Image (cartoon, rainbow, N blue to C red):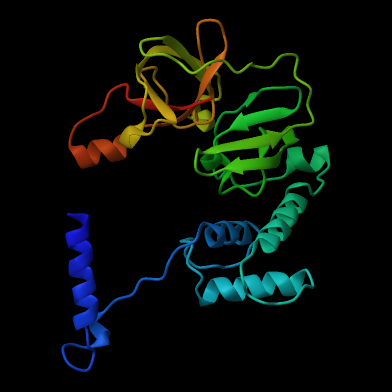
Length: 269
């Protein structure tokens, strides 16, 4: 059947003559998207450059943004995305995140809260959370006490690695992936701007796949709310088996005309 489809396509190409049937104006050719271009667009956006829609397509606005950045750091203004450009952008983003703010300025600064979420220590100075928790933030902190630095991001799996100067008394250890039916516990700060306290809930693993049969996630029944994102999902021994990432909430209820109950998702570790 695949060969028949290919033959049909070849016939169409052979028979196509813009002078005889139809016009090229009716043929829409979509530009190809690139993961490299998408990454460049995202980093440029973090640095304050306007790239237009972050879609992985190298359009005029993205080219102009690349040239503006290259001119700013005094390198050849090619306007072309490359691995070298990506490394230069990463270095500038790291510099931006590492700008020093004194503790007094950090505590007293009146900054808009773009988003809140949960994170957890996995060693003396490394915090794990969700990428979507920090994505729109230019200033990331633990309350108003300490500014955090973004060390790494994984947009595909929605994970970010943050660096803290604080040395906690204890941290959580990663465990094996959960099994179907396992008891689990979630920890976090839901609706923290209102509740302002720590929440601990329990449930069980109800599926070993996430939305769309995503094998990098699993489904669980413990109640979570906005603000739980990035928090640890623990087994009965206190080991981290996942990271809270999402749940079916109001938007899904509106679309499906039904109220989902205890359908939440975690990232496997």
